Length: 302
Image (cartoon, rainbow, N blue to C red):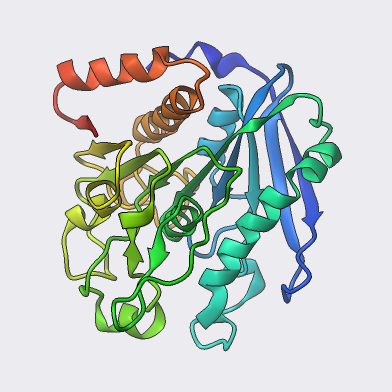
């Protein structure tokens, strides 16, 4: 993909504290943005399990260089908070994660003011993105719900400020959780039928979850089971971190590949520029490249 924007200087401000009265610990965020530019679109990013506002720089820095202001909260499950599987707070962390994103969106003006960006951001160009557990969290804000033990969809967590999103390695559906996941992560039963907001779903062709008895196609449910408009980017050799999204030396990176990380970052950037009605050139170019490429990655849309 074109990389002409990568010489763009960026700046990060952290930590900023966001009001979240019902939370047991302060909600802190990091804001990363290009040093120059006006009318910047916003990405609110939800990290995967155990990470924090200090992770995912390979993604976030590239998005900022492409002209986005990126806001990263640290969720309660961050390893720096020490809340393990057996902590009584863990059972409701999935709800706190969603509440974190709502708190960020509801207080976005003040966050941007503290970061010195209040006059540089477009208030109606807001997207939500997440990876792994963060993708399920972001999906809820896009309109997905959680099925209870009887298969009944739970409450609507969507947020009206969000116009588009991207779900990277998002939890699939169905009663195919492993015994461990069923015991500790029963909320991993998303219902995508109500996720009407435009979104890009990104899945790895070799992403075999230890939480599901299904194969890599589990991570494509967010595309196949949600209403249009949606797009699906499948990366044939990609595993769960898709080359090392959280960091080049992250212990869980099993398929380290900076080129793959750049593809994911640039695909999200291109898709959101199109979905937020900024510029469709990069997304059109990526779609064309997929159609004429060697099959290592593909794009389908509906």
